[in-house]
Image (cartoon, rainbow, N blue to C red; front, side):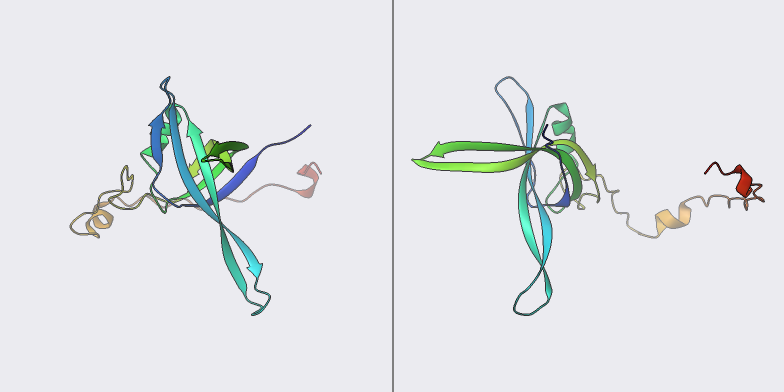
Length: 153
């Protein structure tokens, strides 16, 4: 038995690229930078070393997701590894990429970015806070009738 699952979180290194295959399947490609922390042998200080991961997503979700991602967006991704190799100009090339099954947006898109889902800025940034209704306070919780004998462990 083998397990091929990957979970990473990091920032997009470039704007995502959406294209379609010959049969119309949507393909979204983007890169994610994840940091690895190591101690510098000479200075003794901890340093971040980036790893750059190519990611690919397929189908109608790829098209929908592309509207909300832009360079710098923070995401969490779950998927599987796929190894590809090919020959170009007489040289053998290969890459390891993540095929995305699940994606979670961890930050809002940059203001003005394509497909930004952050609210548009208003002329007065405090106007929305002033005009927003204030929710009623929650009532204080009452006494709890739980005794050690009621706990099943």
